[in-house]
Length: 505
Ligand SMILES: NC(=O)c1ccc[n+]([C@@H]2O[C@H](COP(=O)([O-])OP(=O)(O)OC[C@H]3O[C@@H](n4cnc5c(N)ncnc54)[C@H](O)[C@@H]3O)[C@@H](O)[C@H]2O)c1
Image 1 (cartoon, rainbow, N blue to C red):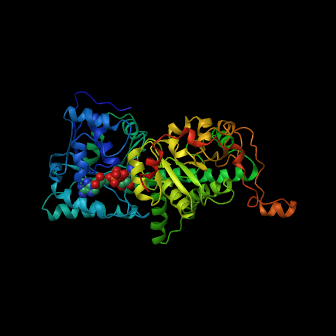
Image 2: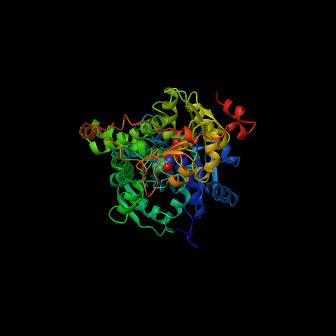
Image 3: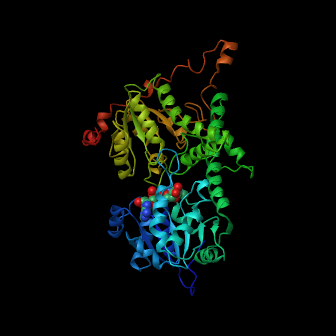
């Protein structure tokens, strides 16, 4: 837990780049009693913030921003000159190229703007995730810019960001560790200043080289991604042999060397961090002749899971999704965020439409749903989950928002043309769904199985089929869900559904 230390002078901070990372950093440092100026190049974003509107959804952030603006500890501007007053300047601009690679153009242009404006005794702290090869260049670039401006050198540090979207405020205020990476700090004044900034934190402050700091951030994300792909591979074994991944992982988690966190099977990871960092690591290492087959497999398994969602829907629909109407439940890459960056929903909806399905999406984040419609040509969006489910041939749970967990499944089944659910997050109760009349598939929990008693027989491999004469799993007939068809959904339809569906047509 961190707390404002009474009697200690506050640190004057500037944060450059007010995205998911920079805005949380700004608001949380202000909350800790520091004087913070947030600097942002996007005029629309600055206008929104000055107007009291949040540019994105992050639980608890709007309240922190408002409270700290009211007491004058947090201000926003588009003018980079504001950093000349700061003791510590954080840089939190983007480093992704949008195509699974790194880019350093944004940070280099940002450094161009700010480095000649830094006060002589200020510390420059990079919060963005940097490509490992850029670390050696960073202090040289900054040193050269200072020299060309006729100014003295400044300390350059890395302070990687370990917060998670959805719980970022709490993660910042109650971190598990604070990592300080030293890129250039001859007299230790940069590290001392950051220690003063974080003096209210009870978490350990770990000081190391900038390269180690960057790799500790990268390593954490690679490990988490590996855990998810591992769980997905394990789930395949469970499906193959009639096991239940919940039971299997539950038992494994008692081993403290393993732990249960992130061992979650489903459609895999998305978002701005994990997918990019896995692919960027593989590509960057390959360029320097270093093979990273484990991380390459993590990425491959992750993409495969998105495709398996399509296969599962096709299987339950009798072999193909063509002509089917699919209710896509959730579009954000995880609950409690409106972030769509590398969200599995984009891949899944695009592929379903390519295969001839009609996709009707709903997400509690209206603004994310609107952006989703722009990203996925041909998708339809609904203004409520009930409207998305009306007349659907199948539903696909893509984001495990609480609102979906709490649905009345009997009502949901009766709205749908065929009560079929593929749960891409293993988030729903098998028993509840099956009792409501659903044909239900998830990942590693069989098809129409129950949590403790799987109903379906294990899938039969080609080799076993040859030995026993049984049909292979590919030949296994899809479950006929017609027996679970609900009553005509017209009875339940609200008068607005056609309008909703026309939103993105
Ligand atoms: N999103 C996360 O959860 C997360 C977690 C850990 C690390 N990171 C890393 O943190 C960095 C930032 O990520 P993000 O998600 O906040 O990105 P983002 O794209 O949401 O935000 C970056 C912001 O910086 C602004 N910007 C760009 N150039 C600028 C300049 N010269 N001056 C002022 N503002 C400028 C952009 O307009 C944008 O608002 C990336 O390197 C990312 O890899 C992100």
